[in-house]
Image (cartoon, rainbow, N blue to C red; front, side, top):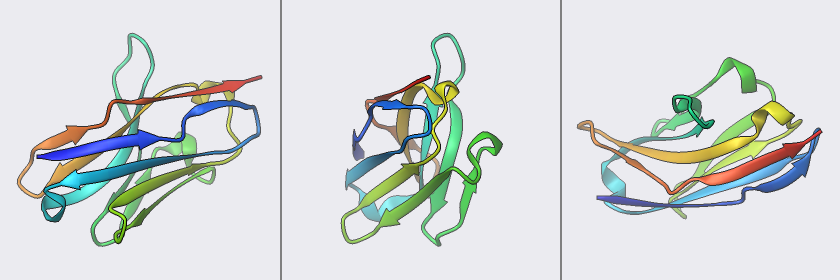
Length: 116
């Protein structure tokens, strides 16, 4: 089992920045990759950014050049630095941890609101 606690969401004006944090606990050594997803009401949950244990990252096209995912292994924490935020980035963001053999775990979600 892996527990994920997110923080850092909030309200920001367009063009501003926020940093989301996701602290993992539990079976840390079993985690293969961690990432951030977002889900608007009535829509599917989509990948925003992901980082593997080896440091490989991938991003949704809509956030490339604006968002950066990173991890602090000593703190078992993954960060999502979000710059140049747009109103269309407004939604709930979820942290995800995937284990080597398949199971996935989710955080409770954190709201990001970007005003125009």
